[in-house]
Image (cartoon, one colour):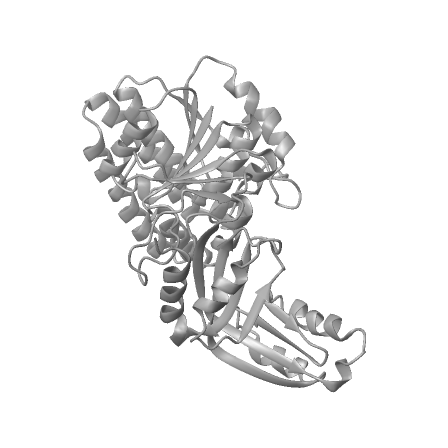
Length: 437
């Protein structure tokens, strides 16, 4: 069995829904299709809840009416037969009657989550009805019947598996279900937060021990460099889960490392595919390492470097603990870190509390801050036993000012802190050194 997830842009119009239908019916074997809400729907539903929290009922009704009109337009374009169109129209009408009902009662978190769930309910019903119109056997699998979270808001894997597997006992070969939405420990409709459709797909894939989890988007997979800066980039065809997690931090928005953890632990491969090029092999992510290879280079802007220098650190214990406690108190993650006998340098990308952090750090030493920095990361098999890899990377950056180097914290990356203004030159130099044929 395979699990196929399609994001909001992939089902963003009647034409795109038809393309998804073509993709999911073109393969063999059993398939579970996970859908996000149509592009823009969740943002609009969030906007509606904002009006309702502020008791601006007229504003909410205006936005609701505009969104409902959009869906009637999709229905008119999607279906060929009056029966299918009427079935979809009736469902859309019922959904928006539900949403409108919240303009007539007290509004809180429970009602908000119910509204946010409607996007996925709409997209899955529209696709299922379209497939039925085309006489394609399909079964709508309500996520609210099996997707569960525990008291801490984390997915309850055992509950998901025990509820899902009995629903798959029949002879059906194609199922459609909702991403993002779930039922929490209080038996209330809830959600898996943004990016939740990827999470849903991986949780389902792990529960059924899928052959493969496919994440379909309109992005052409992961590249070995940023195609906006470096010419001649190539798609990365294979990544280890650890390598994918490294790239995700550096802006590979096609996936989130937390979302694919269930697949990684269940040893189920994840493949990133492009709805605009469905025949392309995409990027396969699994637990199989490619020894002795460098896969990709990525960069992250808007980095701040902080150096704390104190002679009291020499031969002293507790200094690093005090530094880390300051960042913990402001809930600010640290990205890179380098230490010496008398100081520590580190980077952050969340600057909301930068002034307060610097103020508190000055209790322990002299503090300097460098703004407008950039982390460049080389991802691949960076185990220290591989001779020469770090020298190839350093050699490529011989003309670039490097503020920090992080090597050895992971077997899958080596990172450099440079000025943002040097990023383009650095990426081009690394690409020429590491990937030129």
